[in-house]
Amino acid sequence: MIHLFAVAHIISSWAMAHLGLNDEILLSLLTISMIVVVTQLYRLPLEVSAALAALCCFAGFYLGTLGDNWLTGSGVKWLTEYSNEITTFFVTEIMGWATTLIAARRK
Image (tube, rainbow, N blue to C red; front, top):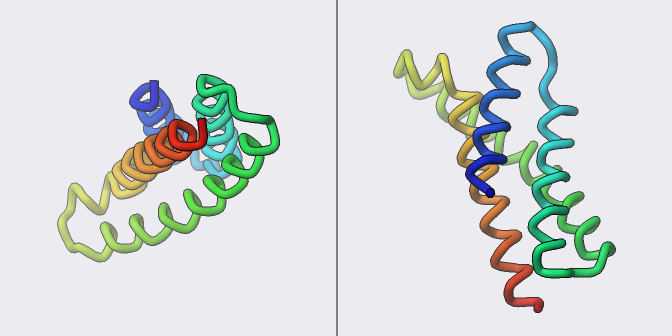
């Protein structure tokens, strides 16, 4: 399921870039949805879901910006062209699996 959210993030990021639109709101909504789904699978309280969702949105923005800047500065053409999509995928995977780990340990 986390992989599906990561692919949805990639598609959204790519589509928004090609439409010339900002992707932050859409990616944040997808991230929040992923965190809520994962935490509800482990039946965590809504407060925990909300806290993790807020934390992941800020972390996703920060890590995504760092990763995008790092890949853009690599000088490798295909990494530069798809840096946003690559970064979005890996950051989503990290946040999804970190949330799963937190939820599993909390239960």
